[in-house]
Image (cartoon, rainbow, N blue to C red; front, side):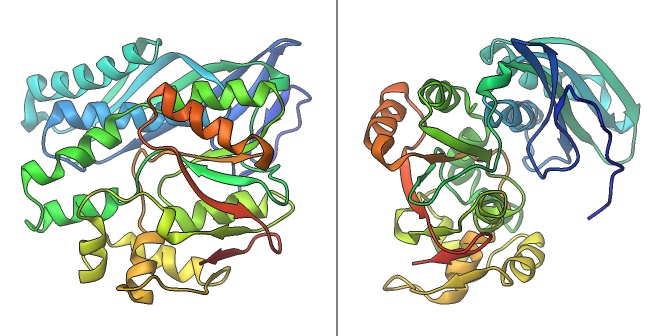
Length: 325
């Protein structure tokens, strides 16, 4: 990992010293700015959908910190040959999701590049004493996930013509769905002291992000594989080895801290690995919730209309470890 020089500022509440989702800078005693940026190459063919997914993905980091998005800037690299109309469709798709988040597009920057790329720079706000980090989970906390897993598998299936345009639609809608509703529930329960940590599920896969939470906390994660919600069709692709190129590197890294103790009937260990090492785009929130509040938290996720409200594990065991059962 590239080492970034540490900066010392009493108002920098979250910076480069932590593998967290966004930077946080205190503006006043009661207000802090949440700052993040993310962009990537297209993972779907439709430019409008690409813009929607890129926006939901970038905005997610603010929700993961317990914040609310306010202002965004577009970041675009685009080949001239694709034309202004295609670029406009990408930005229109993004703007639709930004509006849904209650934020505004205030500008941005575009350069010419042979390979298209798009994303956002996002500024949100959070009360400093309501700030959430990926660390802080406690022994016995319940682990919740708010979106299904399998976006890497499904988009790879599309690229290999195994998944149809119709079959990929639920995956696109999942990636383009904001974590706003789940984020509202997380903030509400954090006010009562019941949410101890939060992150969003993205490129390091389920195993990697569970590890990051456990490494930043005082205990490990025990993951109940059969409770992990999967996008329809993802398990078949995992069983057949239809995985993104990044899955291998995630798995090699994760094998150091992950133990698969039990494989569900009808599956094999390779399939389980292909799921938990699947790099996600615009995945759900992973939330550490006090066990005594778990039922109420789950009920509120359902009532709020979160995509899923899955209790997928427990924080237990040695710090930094992930056990799959």
